[in-house]
Amino acid sequence: MTRFAPTALFDLDGTLTDPYPGISGSILYAIDKLGHPPVDEITLRAAIGPPLEASFAAMLGGDALLAKEALAHYRERYAPIGLYENKVFDGIPEVLANLKGAGVQLFVASSKPRVFCERIIEHFGLGSFFIRVHGSEFDGTRANKADLITYVLEREVIDPDCCVMIGDRRHDIDGARKNGIKVIAVGWGYGSEAEFEATPPDRIVRDVPALVPAVTAELGL
Image 1 (tube, rainbow, N blue to C red):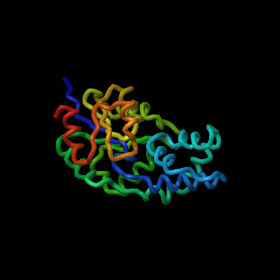
Image 2: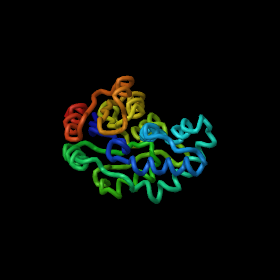
Image 3: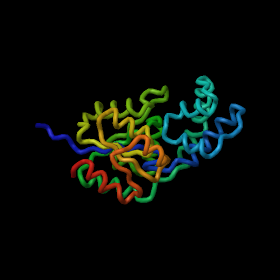
């Protein structure tokens, strides 16, 4: 019988890095370009993690066409500037090194466009930890987290029984559930307690050092 390697899929924004300055600044830039008043911090924080076009639609009264225009303006600023207004959470490189050393194969699985994910991972020196970086495409393909995880499992030939998703929002939890894989929610990102109560993960990890034992426990290592 073939033995599949234990695997961890990592969300990016709010899990590996804190992207708030770059994302919030680029959202405000886009909203301003459309001539709309700025949105508040609660709205900005809620937009970190979910597919951004849907977040713009919610900000703009459900106008899908205006949301697409806002997303284009957002990328005008985010690609050259906002992408780098970002910070790796303390302890994350050590977590990745320890998991890789324990024989866990690591992948990024983010709703953010793959090109942006790859640039961020390389810019912060995390590329050596991951076998591959997966994300959405600019046309919206695989922006839905469940679709993305399905693609990653098939593309990388991963056994769902040997896999865990690590993320900070309900979209990570929902996407994992729909694909039959375990899921760990992290407490240092942008998900709320109410979010985790409404969409319970297999476990919640409150601080970065506790992530390694949580992942290895879920994978049975």
